[in-house]
Image (cartoon, rainbow, N blue to C red; front, side, top):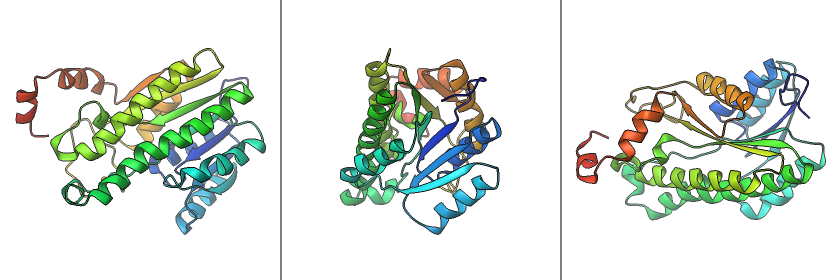
Length: 251
């Protein structure tokens, strides 16, 4: 359960090596979160992430999780909830892909879509049902401004995030009044290993800034969080641009 200050005591991070997810975990640990589950593919990176959070004073456990194996999600994630209530589930896994390559490699494009959308739908529904069963908790879904309007430069990734965003909004509506809160986070360009080498977009941000926005959104009970906040009016304008004009933008 949350403590007297409203801070979650337990966190399940889906995408246990995500730089953004780990930044959120570090921030929450500094605010009294004491139990963290890192769900991800077994690897030295996952163990290193767990050790890093343990050094901050949290009890950290890892659980094998693969977004591309939805048949295993209920058993793997359900087991976490049998160990005790989870106050916050953060869905932070995703795959950027390589647009230039993936357009000519349908199997690679499908892998992006299955990771970012199908895997997220499966894991999200499993966790949502468990949260509803326990009667409380939050599900935070890392979406992207790329899902607001698919761009020529990354429409495979953008379309998968558009699906994820719509799914998370609908799930939030379905869970309204049950005691479970769903929050969609839409960061812009985030400086991480995943985006290293890519041209930096305007209003770029960092994992730490996203973590700050996530914590503030949770405190406010927000349903949607933009990072940075200035992206909200920018993307509203982009979303409504006539298509012939949108094609002319250097996006």
